[in-house]
Image (cartoon, rainbow, N blue to C red; front, side):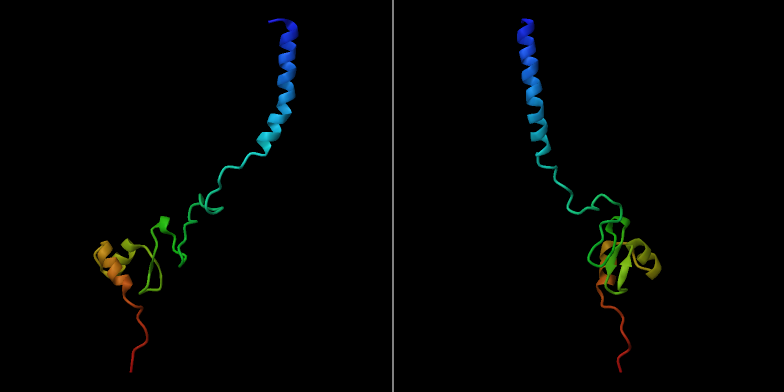
Length: 98
């Protein structure tokens, strides 16, 4: 390859660099997570505000977020999904009926 041909090839490459840079700048950005805090620990709150990744789930009976193993110990329940679900599914205790 002659020096002239090499220089022409280099000039052609240099002429294409701005076009390549412009096309890259217009490229679609990578898809973002479903929410801006998706990767943040504790950002997985449910409709009641319970943080599932921290072990919390909503208990209808107590009207608060509970960790099943802690609730089982506090209430003397078996630490099984069935017992915790049955306990939390019961309506909250209300005022005594007359």
